[in-house]
Amino acid sequence: MTRWLAWFVGVAFILLGFVEVLARLLSDEPVDLTALAWWFAALCGGGALVLLGSFVITRPDLALAAVMLGCLLGVVATAWTVVLPLLAIGLLVLRIMDSKGTPSGAAD
Image 1 (cartoon, rainbow, N blue to C red):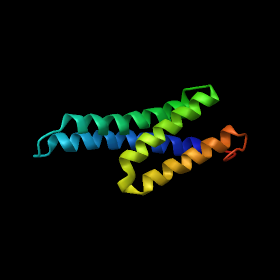
Image 2: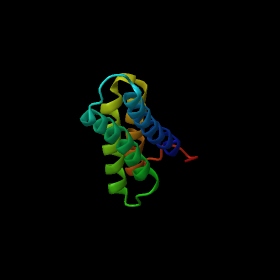
Image 3: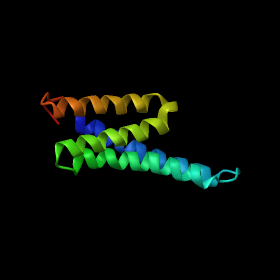
Image 4: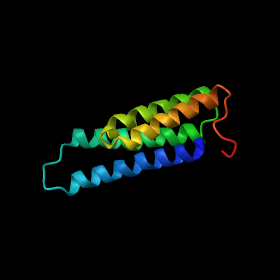
């Protein structure tokens, strides 16, 4: 279950990052490049860290740190959605349980 949730949260953050940037670029309002960079870095960077920590990094302590930082970045940027931050927090709890030796599901 942890791997599926990590996949969903990571991809959702990245997709929201691209959607946010495209929406701001295509709007009639003036583009604030600082805000644009923040949204892109927080969402796409957070999603990338979640995916790297869940699927690429092999050292458990570094993997957990990457997932924690990715979740923090994504939660700050998506707090208004309510559901995605709850999923990110759930992923973080599952990853911490896995790192402590408590499996979160048999079919990961």
